[in-house]
Length: 152
Image (cartoon, one colour):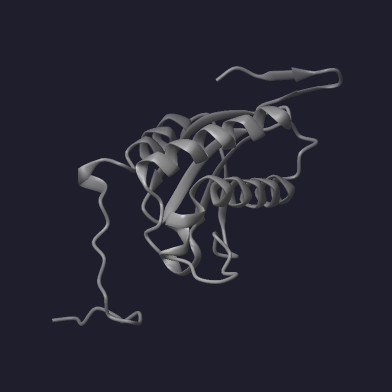
């Protein structure tokens, strides 16, 4: 990774961000995921940053972004979640209504964000890009609630 330069700063700030769908509903198709990745990249550029990597699974999206220091991480998350939800509903509203009824938000209110260092950047990028592979597929258990695994 190379350092970025602005008029009065030199920086290298990267963030690994994860959003999950409301109720962890498996609403995201491959087509929707590609649409969201492209739109997130566009939004990052609009804020002076860059999308380094992105991938989706049925119920979440991983983003690896580089942003200048004048963009607060919490503001970046708010903008990405709001705009991705708005645009994906415009394009795929009918499909989304099969999973999320009424006024339910597209994304859960929670999110994950971590700053990354240059030494682990390739590992984080590799992890993000493995999201749609068969060996990474999540096993869903329809139990209705979370339960602890029994020790035996």
